Image (cartoon, rainbow, N blue to C red; front, side, top):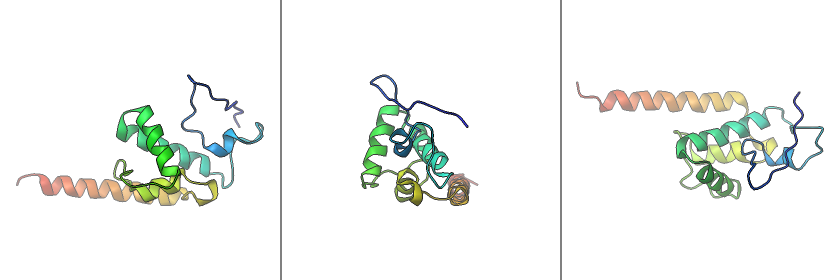
Length: 119
């Protein structure tokens, strides 16, 4: 177990750390279910990779958490699913759901690539 101080300042942001650990007793650095922290972090990483900008990823994540998932699709993951990943800990998808969505996204991307290549 890693114990962290989640105090943020102007120059130090913990984008990958969900709000529930920033507001809790510093001895507990996760909320139940235990996969919730990792799912949240992956959701933030997906936005950062799609947008290539920490600032834009923060803005979209904030918008998604506030309930506006429109135009929030990233790396083929739909905005509604990202909203679940970034939402409250009990509502975050289980790891097998995330793996399923990522796998299907990859399969769809490969299929689209095959169809777009001239024969």
